[in-house]
Image (cartoon, rainbow, N blue to C red; front, side, top):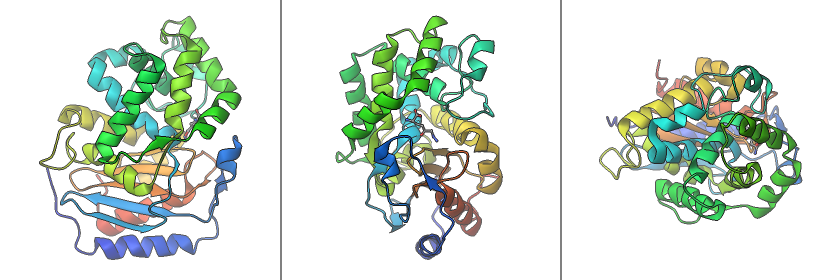
Length: 312
Ligand code: DON
């Protein structure tokens, strides 16, 4: 399914970037590690990769930022491609309604995380990938997959971010060990976490992110008639999870306001998908109280409204 882009899309994207540049209420930059705390909050970028192969972008479109939890979309796609439905034995498909790093549901639910986008779920998905590889190889596979999706080899892990995540990620250590006690995580928790922290520390620009998300907009292909990354069914399933779980306890509000599948990260990035039409990368480092980018959410709400791209 390929739908031609709105003819006025370049104008809409430029206007939204200008509006966001003028915003004063920009949210609060994540400060749990110095590498994120030091990012300038006045930045904003928006990039839209369309079905006809255009990349329309405005603002800080080439600045690499820490994709953090947006990486969970790519690790899920990789794990589903390798292990198929076996992934769902470890992790559920329901919104959690709790913060991204919450542990509370795990005890009542036999260590099986509600969905693959909360931290516990993503750690379990990383463990599934690791069941086939040594940690270094697993990271290499994840990075190769993202570069393939984006059609861009200039995508790398920020080692300082990964190190800091490791030094401060005590809650993730608890989640991994708790799931290990239930056999949901099967590998050594420190190895699983090493890979998890590193894939969260991948840095990309909004242009690269929009390109990397194309497979979700085009039925699993890099373009409507392009190379296949995952099956069409898998792409639909990932989009469904992004819509229902991609913004944690803010997922309902994002669906209400924007009406597109989306996945956020505490680096301020959001990958959003307009099925059949476009893949969208948006970034602004200031977060709302839930941990989702304040301006990227606002910009996507305006983009969906002005293009009529809401899936509803
Ligand atoms: O594990 C963590 O806490 C971070 N590396 C990633 C969290 C994140 O991006 C959640 N997103 N909003």
